[in-house]
Amino acid sequence: MNRSTSLFVGLLLVFLTSWLALVVVPYIQMGRLLPDVDDVTQDQTPAAFSGLAEQGRQVYAANGCVYCHSQQVRSRVSGADIDRGWGERRTVARDYLRDRAAYLGESRMGPDLANVGSRRDKADWLYTHFYEPDAVSPGTNCPPLHFLFSRHKIVGQPSTDALQGLSGDVPKVHEEEVVPGHDAKALAAYLLSLKRTSYKLAEAPEEKTDTP
Image 1 (cartoon, rainbow, N blue to C red):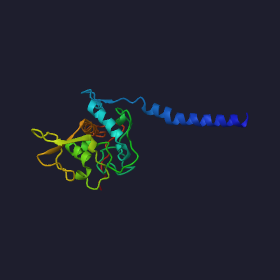
Image 2 (spheres, rainbow, N blue to C red):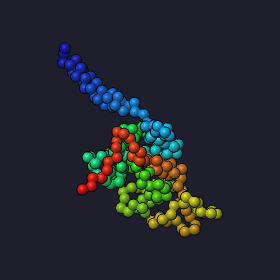
Image 3 (cartoon, rainbow, N blue to C red):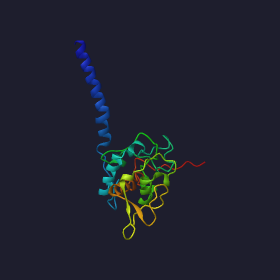
Image 4 (cartoon, one colour):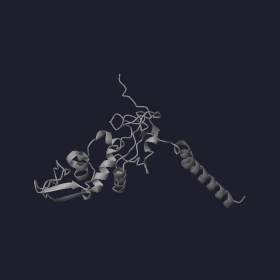
């Protein structure tokens, strides 16, 4: 066997080993996972995203939210995520069954969003954060997403979903209003649906706070 053949065989073995480790083994471990089904109600967890939330997932990806926010709660052994209130347990593979792409994230310039839907139960706060982040999160690095909203003069009665409590870019009172567009509503629906540890799974029991 000449030198070039040995090099080729060596590279082939490295490729096959990597493929087995990164593709085949994870598929065997997680590729056949199914939703957890309640014996009584037959409800499935995790639940499927609504159509609007699925559109919001695409808005989330298109605007680079994944670069500053993670969606993975670590166990107490690995970090302080649970103590920060980001989840009652660690996230596991089954939590991402409904995701076409799992936005685990690499950076945490902002808080983890795996369970933001459990911390925020209304879209109003999220709309204000999208439009003017500093109004609800002073000192945040999150950029404003003005293009997700429309600003126009009030004709007749004010819109019921017009933003309230803006401090910087304030519309003229009783004359103008800022209203969330479809993408803003979709993004809010997606975030409100993120409740990855609000349900119980056998492979990830709830981690209680250690008390002396």
